Image 1 (cartoon, helix red, strand yellow):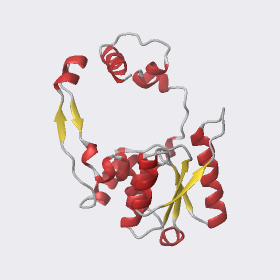
Image 2 (image 1 turned 30 degrees about the vertical axis):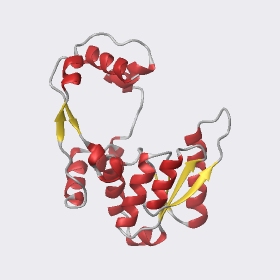
Image 3 (image 1 turned 60 degrees about the horizontal axis):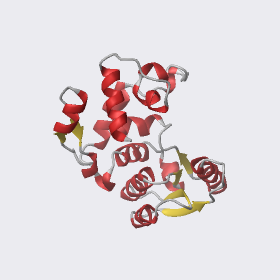
Image 4 (image 1 turned 90 degrees about the horizontal axis):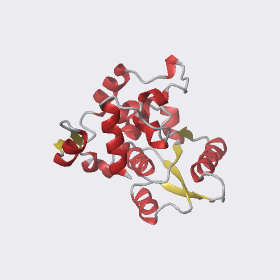
Length: 202
């Protein structure tokens, strides 16, 4: 749970050894060294600065709030960015909007498609609508109804993908989104493996 993750983070900050658990994957930087990403595909500080300029006046500048509980758990002052106050309630809106604003005129005309079971789908739906771009969000059929409804309220066409036992539901949704992209000519946007999405979320 989140408390155990925070305690592991504290240990990592203090230089203590992390165990070979999934938790360690998220809290120990050395666990990320196995992935090899071409340097030209890495999001840079310049990308983040460009995204900041691009998003000025289009997103909320959310406050940072101090948490006494986190200070105590981690043994240092912790400021939390209150992105729950962002449009659609998540930082995902910033990443989605930055990506939408980097589309070519032709891509904007054809629309976009993405797979998401929640926050990115809602963020992309709202971002695309705000920019006059049509969006399709592929969600697993067991995604929360509240998230499906909100994506539709924000202006997206929502398509549901089957949930296949033994197969990650996001993998199935991603395959369905790729099909939609190929059949309808929409630009396929990835919720996290996308340089401009990452820059906007930064």
